[in-house]
Image (cartoon, rainbow, N blue to C red; front, side, top):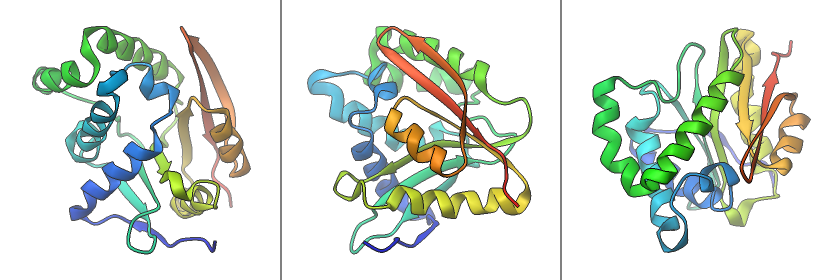
Length: 204
């Protein structure tokens, strides 16, 4: 399979991005740690990504798609330096409570709070672009789509001299990101969960 074209998404493609990410993260430990599981798992994950690509993540997020024949093969959400993924006012947090209860329940919300607190401690202090999510449709995994997306979305970081940062709970992803210049800069554990944080210096 040749590398798919990767481009910034259009404003009317949020549904496509949410669908790709929801399918890609079905077995991702970090989300499964706090989202509802069992029969509610599929709906909870899709509702989470529906919200993420619309307004739950910073409104100035950057959405990317890898095009396939008839359907996207991959999607990514990036934040420019200085933007925080879940930087909500007190009022916005109250307005999001019904959604959080629906997709996580009270126990899941507490696990999510603990996970968020851990992740916040590992963000680099220097300005950095944050790869919040990158996912590849299950049928296209292992075919170079993730690498194509990383090459395309890291190019602006290199051109602007910007450090890139991400978190992952999957060893396979650690290996993928390492091939594109990321280095493990932190690790931590929560019950039944291991996370890596990775940083990439810009390349000339």
